[in-house]
Picture 1 (cartoon, rainbow, N blue to C red):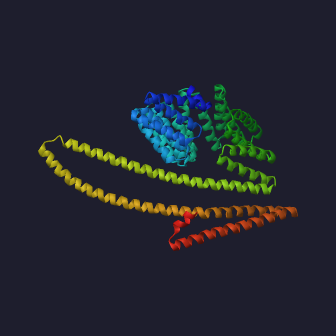
Picture 2 (picture 1 turned 30 degrees about the vertical axis):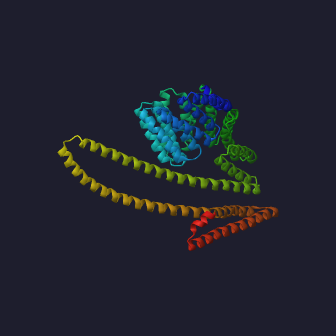
Picture 3 (picture 1 turned 135 degrees about the vertical axis):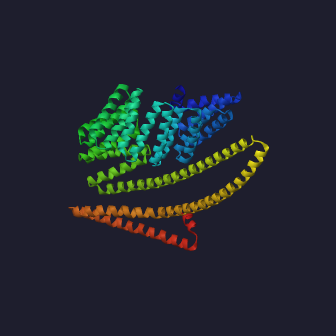
Length: 520
């Protein structure tokens, strides 16, 4: 506990202590101490966001742990390397480290650590939007936990499995799974996780518009949070109650709960939740037609979203401001905020495309790994058969060897045919992948100008409505000027798309399509 306190609160002190310990271990050739020192340095850099440096130290520690054949140390370091890769967005590499750690933990019979790894692996799939695969991982983890009689692990993984069902839109299955987890938390008297379970179940009922059930769970969470004197849990419960009241149009009561939750989050300096609450309070103001107050809350939420670099929250903030500015007849600001909203949306669209490509690559890597594992299993089985035959008499050995050679010849012939078929299939797959990449790049080149054309066309429709509703010549003139400017931009980006297509056609005719993308 003291070590974690140093790492979190005083990294400089932690660095000095770790450096002294590492130097001393190296001087006396205490390898276990050297491994631990490098691991601690990795942790210091990880907590400071220096992921490249953290990876270097963790790999040094891993090399020594392997030399010492310390399975616990090897598995622990694989886990931390997986965390580093996850934070850098390298999900295939992170998945590999987690699976390597899981293999060791299961061989050791360490159910508790295996549960954490199942959660991490499922999260990787979930982050990439592959919730069905995440669910499979959580369900496998539940079976392992049940076999190991680890009730808390079963409950935790049921909660995560419920989250996967929720992401897939199956709220009934989500409630069933999360309720099963809740009952276990209550059975083992885990009050903190019981409160959290009530919170997530309440949100599922909100999604189903079953507000009475939602409120019951939110209030149970609130009661436990007060019992535990946990400010974070208390703020979350107040937010849960506020959301339920808001959706029932009980705006004054919702506002009171939001305000109480906001004060707690401010005391905790929880900028993410402070930003979210300002957006919620802005929505509440907007529903009450208090557009000035709504704009103030949206601006506060957006400011914090920029500070924590949350693209999702920034996108939401600009969208809310564009909506509010339109309600306030500030069409110029609405236009600017709408443009910023679309710019972030386009950026996130490209990021999602990259995630999908990573998912496909990760699936290919795992299929390949499983194929190699199956082949290794076959080879081991073949060796075992040879040893069995070796125990027979010489005459029987000769006879069996003759049969084996004949059978092996037939198997080898078949294997060669399968290999040839597999190679041909792989070549065809690579060609299709190449075509897919080219198609993706063409779509990417053309998508940006088309996005501008579509966006400005949508805005022009709104401006036409504004023009028709305008009561003064000044308003009409402003709308007309904006229409003219947008039409010019539509024409500009339309020609840009036409130029891209023309240039690509020239490259295709000359057989130099790849140069087109390299230039870009």
